[in-house]
Image (cartoon, rainbow, N blue to C red; front, side, top):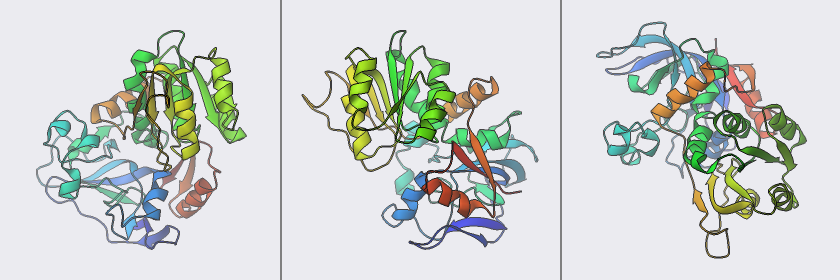
Amino acid sequence: MKAVQFREIGRSPEVVEVPDPEPGPGQVLLKVTAAGVCHSDFVVMQSPAELGIGLPLTLGHEGAGTVAALGAGVTGLEIGESVAVYGPWGCGTCPECAQGKENYCRRAAALGIRPPGLGAPGAIAEYLLVDAPRHLVPLDGLDPVRSVPLTDAGLTPYHAIKAALPRLVPGSTAVVIGAGGLGHVAIGLLRALSPARVIALDVSERKLALAESVGAHEAVPSDDRAVARVRELTGGFGAQAVFDFVGAPPTTAIATAVAATEADVAIVGIGGGAARVGFGEIAYDASVRSPYWGSRSELIEVLDLARAGALEVQVETFSLDEAPLAYRRMHAGDINGRAVIVPH
């Protein structure tokens, strides 16, 4: 089968031929209908050895497909059924996994369990081997191409926003830093789930326009005036919730600077920045979190939101052979929303 692999540091991902996977006991084989491309892949490609990831690696941690074959002992799935893949695989037995929070599995690292595309073979291929049926969620009529980004670009902001909802009462403000793949989904989620006024920040005029198109009340350039502008828009007080989907040093500084007293600040992006927390560094009683992905039950909730028409992702599609181009365009900031690979 064809697969898109990262094979060598310093080289771009490439389309290669690899053996067709076969499901073992307890496993499920999917014929991939859609796979998402994500900025997180670049972090993996920059330092795979430091992350304990071996090469070559088939990329793609956002996946959807139809069930092609079932390993021995698998029940509850039908051949041809359309499903989405829950990506942050865990051990399935620790206290966090027992709650469906496999994104916070306490044993995954020790057991060498890796998400697809982030250590295990990923979804940007013609077929994907899934380790357990519990990591599959029925799409139930959703278009896999438009829905596959929800497995990360929807689930990750939903997980971050859900914890902050008690702060987002009528009259409150939420700031979204970075209106790209995850950020534009976060804006839609905030509009669907809360009465908060949403202020979007980005360095790109194109992405600020996208932010406004998906519901941001204000779109502010992320420059040296951004903090002052947010303070002006909030009467000098700041925002009750801040979501940084970039995570670079300049944006983490903005995130803490625009936080109001008792605010919730979530640093979601992995751009190498760190928030300064301490007396005088941030507003009184503000909390700073670094959330990761989301739980299995939250993915079901995200898909339910999409099914109800309350959530939509802007996507641009590419064939499997065009996947290297998708990565180049994403690296150049030339994707409006999310890039999705359609293998078949």
